[in-house]
Length: 149
Image: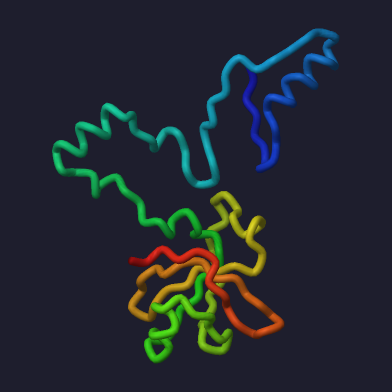
């Protein structure tokens, strides 16, 4: 049994095989339990049975997190109301329109490593719209994933 703290891209199954080779034996992984991914920890999770009870009691909103929580480590951009028609139609946004705030959240899975130049975009009223990627050649933020309905 072992506990591994690692970054993304680490293959625990391969690590088990490599350890076995160093010990001169065949080795494989019998089970794997991920206990933390960034800010999400297994101690904060609930079972499916608990979820059913919570739903039947009408308390599900007490347990749901906003979708932008996953991206909280990315910088945050706010689009002014005057440009909202572009924002809500999924258009590119001129970088001059967006007020970018640096994220102070370092305790999360670093999605930005997979999406360089991406930021979270919000409306001026604080509504999360989606993830935009900066295109320096066009001097625009381009929609990457939109989440608003």
